[in-house]
Amino acid sequence: MSKASNPTSRGLRRVAAAATLLGLALAAGVAHADFDDHPHLVAADREAYQAMMQLRAASNGPAAFGGHRDRALHLLEQARREIHESARFADHHRD
Image (cartoon, rainbow, N blue to C red; front, side):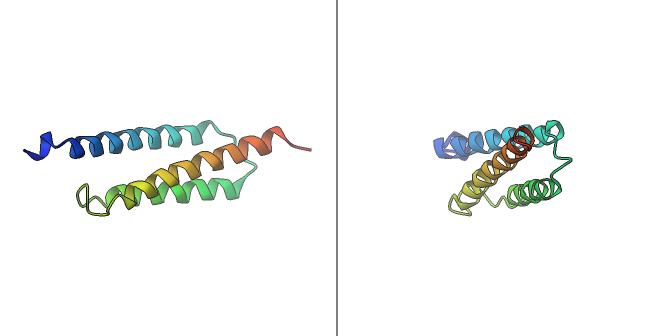
């Protein structure tokens, strides 16, 4: 069985592609979120995004990190969503 026809390999490529698209969508969301009043959230979002880029660059094959790199990417994406929701919540619940 060739590497290209390996179902696990194809699945991991699909997951990586979906994660990349989600990351790009979240990055685009930063431009639309009003973070002007939340400099610490901006910094946290930027750091999480940079961490994601570093993890994506650390690609030594699908099994090199035992799935932990992909899990870390997923958690960072989730963290970025929460950061964005924090800003939205703060903006909608001002005193």
